[in-house]
Length: 288
Image (cartoon, rainbow, N blue to C red; front, side, top):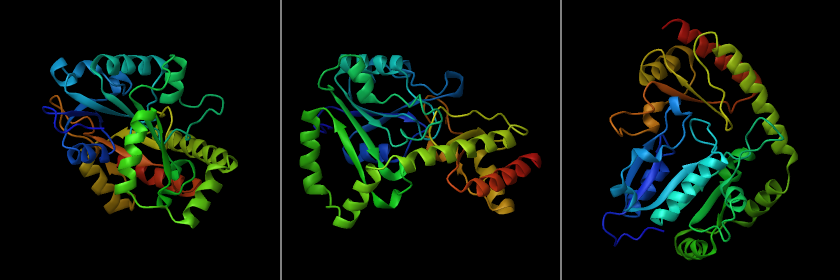
C-alpha cells in the first residue's frame, strides 16, 4: 500500500500506539509521523497537529478503535472527518479493530470503520481496510488468526503480498479458528468478566488516583504519581505486579511524549487475581 518510489512517503500513526505500526512504516520505506492523543481531548485524533506539507505526502494512516492503550472509541463524526481527509489527500485508512468485541454495554458495541463507511454511503469502502483478530475476543493470541476486510482493489494487492510473504495456517489452527469465530457465547462471557474486573479495579484505584473508565478494550490508562518508568520498577520490585510504562508506547512528537507518566494496566487475569493486583497497585501508590 506504500509507494516507496514517491518523494518522502509518510505513514501517520496515533501516539501512543501499538509499535508494529512504526516498524511496518520503516519496512515499507515510509517516514512515520505522529498525532498525539491526549486526555484533554478524550484521546481523539487531532488532524490539525500535522501540516498540509505532511498530509500531502501521506499514503496511509493507522487508526486503532477501540484504542490500545487509551481505550477510546471513534464516533461517526470522527470517522466522517477522517474519511474526508482521506478523500482530500488520497491516503489509505488502515483501521486496527482487534479490541472491537471487548466493550461494556451489550446494546452499544463500538462503531467500526466498515459500518461507519456504510452509514456514510461510501460504496466500495474507498481507500479503507480493517484488521481484526481472534486474539482479544477469544483470548487466543498464540493462535495468530485474524482477517483483513475492506476495499477490493487494496485487498487484491494484499492477497498477492500475503501469498509470497506469509505462511499457511495449519489445519488444526484453521479448525480452532472456525470454532472460535463461530461461537459468540464465550465472547459474551468474556465481556461479562471484563466488566466485573473493571468495576472492581476502578473502585479500588479511585481512592488513590484519577481513573478514567475506557470506552472499550481491556486496558486502564492511568497517571502515575512518579515517572512511569520509576513507578513500573517500584511496582514490580516491591509488589510483583507488571505494567507497561506509557512512554515506551509513545514517541516524542510536537514537543512531548504523550505516554510519559502514564502506565497501561491490562486486566487479563482472573477477577480474583485482578483484585489482588489492584490492591497491590493501590498500596504502591499510597507509598509514593
